[in-house]
Length: 181
Length: 181
Image (cartoon, rainbow over the protein chains, first blue to last red):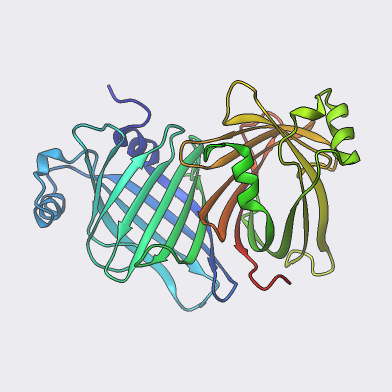
């Protein structure tokens, strides 16, 4: 039995194929970037070797992992028509044993830098998933929430490592793909 | 003395001139629209005739109004290069006397339809201002929050009148204009 603000429920609601419209605001240059992509979110086994290795990298007991998943994306940006936006990462939630709406999210490849990262998440009273990740040269803040079961929104901020200056703010509208392709 | 989740504080933090980058996602057509604008938010007197008339329109005692303000915007959209995005409205917060973080927001011109509107606002624990407005043929949901005192974000959803379907989702990055022009 998990409440609405538990990570298990949030990941379950996120599984599937999503068609994403993403707008990035590069704040310094007042530039707009538009990205269209397809995102696949698939549950993976807690026994998966990649999950166990990621837990070991962060000295976490793999039995604490809840609902690990793989996220893959493939799309196109209008910033550079030749650059295909494509990637995949494995994410492993490690809920705080004492605070059901908080925990760590391990990933084998970060959003702002392509290295493994451990972020701190919490889920607010109104069901918004908030993830804060500190990298060596930047910090990232993501908010994800559902408007309805088939539509979710994501706001991502890339900040300077100090965390005060926001370099890029992006907004994604993600619509569940009903066709399965 | 007002807490962070009181509308007075939120409006005070919002006063000034903002340079806005807005991306609208027209979800049905997967269309991106980019709008650049300047937004001015100016406090107005609770004794202003427009404030009193708006309160009377909604049968509210004008003495309940807190921090009424005028918002003006002027900008350009890439949707139609000939259409200037320009407008102005007066907004009057009417806090709930019993719930300090909730209330009504009256405005003399709505966002989705150009008629007067009364929305219901609340301010979440993490300081996000949330406004729900129901019009005759549509509903609007706005979330506004500050990343720091000089940067705020706004997510606006235009929904069908039933409220389930989202027609347009837009995201604004609003940077305080330091130059004063």
